[in-house]
Length: 177
Length: 197
Image 1 (cartoon, each protein chain N blue to C red):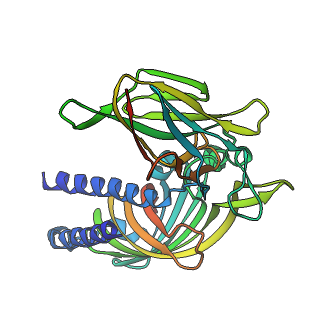
Image 2 (spheres, rainbow over the protein chains, first blue to last red):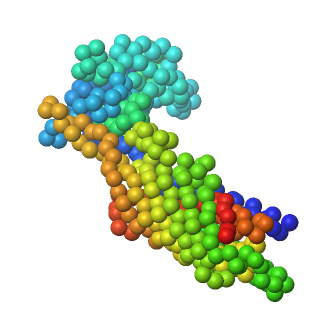
Image 3 (cartoon, chains in turn brown, cyan):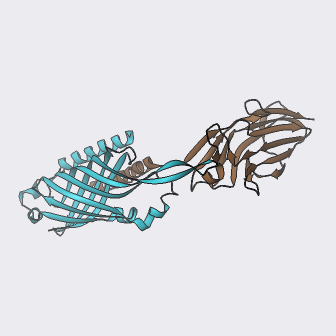
């Protein structure tokens, strides 16, 4: 019995050891740049508009601009934002909109919204424009100001750190009457 | 690194345990195994798990000490084509591992040992490179070759059958010393099946 415990111990340690040494070797091919004011939010009437457009050849303060498509080989980028609505007792709670219309790009809607910017037909601009129609109430939209290339795991992932126009600290509070 | 240190401590404890549990009765008769001074082995763990062919030769100097050398070669058709796309930073293509072993237990048929080894290893690593096509920069993943030498230690267990056939389990770790682009550590893992003659 003692012998079997001994063998089992060695086998477990071997497996632990394999995991330990192999995980030291992970490679994350990421290029991060900072370009302000690439996401825009605005509320008018009962519609919240969210847009995000940027050139494929992105000027980011370096001597030469960065070709996003050649770097990522991806025709899509995304960023996330979420919404909250104030309930009758005055508490903010998570709100998932039901009427979302994308005029450019696309949306994945779950507990938050992933706005997808898609490269246009001329291969010059990544575009996203969405209208969200809302019922009367007080709302808050919270933007994560980080635009990331989608499905570019085979090559280099690009992260664009940005800011949101029309929001204070990437949060916009507004009322729909 | 803390986990690795804890494991090495545990191995040493195991080795001590093995030494204290040796039966003296079997040692009064000299086993025929001791008269056989050479051993060759094939690493089945690396062959099945990593697609690496590993062959070892070990020469027994006396009851306590032996020296040997292990060669490990990567099966290139297995993973090499996917290297640029996968999430690993380095790919080891070959390892040559000279080692010295000290038997912690004196039994002829099953024993624990301590090992000091050097690991001459080489392969490829990935890095990001910025290129320019005249209009704009773009970033690509490139691969380059590396070579390095690691020093390390291991513990192991051997079990002999029919006085000639052996199962040899080795677990250890080494640290690469000279090249910042090589893997910082190299594992010494092997489950060898061999023949002593």
